[in-house]
Image (cartoon, rainbow, N blue to C red; front, top):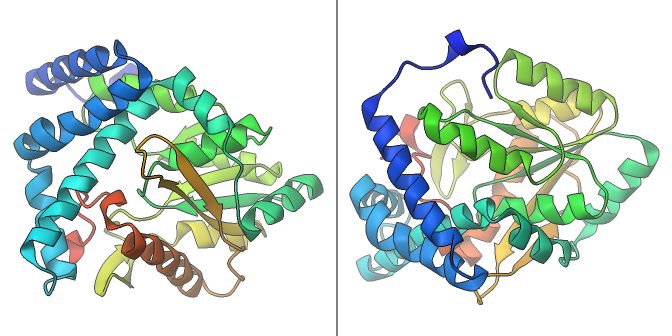
Length: 298
């Protein structure tokens, strides 16, 4: 969400053409009935985009790093499931009305939900933290439908043509969204100070992060979610939207708030909460990310 035209990346023909192709495929999917389009999105990334873009190879490399003792066929199946989930997630996030309608029927579960309600009623800020697992937007949409003002923080994509409509999909779910950077940081700080709720995803490689163990390997992890929670006396609540076997619906779970201690200890607890879900449903995590980039993986 760049406000100054001079701040935009320069024109790149390859990015422009990639965006044209992507918009064409997304438009084709959106022309289908909801159930079919979500399945088509999964198929498209699993069979076409994933292999061509190198996502399949990266997912398999990551799986070989963390689970070398698992049979190769099992790791390959997990990689395929992860690509399918990523494709479904993409199309769901562009299917604003249909996705929001389904998410509005989800009743969040777990002790964190009661803590979230109590914090809202008391005017205290909350930081909801999750990973690229299932589709976290299902949880945000479910909470927005229940009257919560869930803000989001996002990282602008390098492809500015794709980024323009990608940002609009996040804004369409309701609740303020803020870009990473000085302006975005100021915006979400104001949101927290006013007793708002903010979603942060923590499970991508951060060059300035602290190495914490994730699935048995050191992963550079941002401590910002815990640091903000400590600074603003906010609850830090891990949450997860797990895709159900039908491939279309979700179970939204909110863990108990992480006790305030040190940023490292708090983010280790959040990491372990994500690990628990990944081990239970390995095909729902985004293995396509360079999570262990700083440790020499992918």
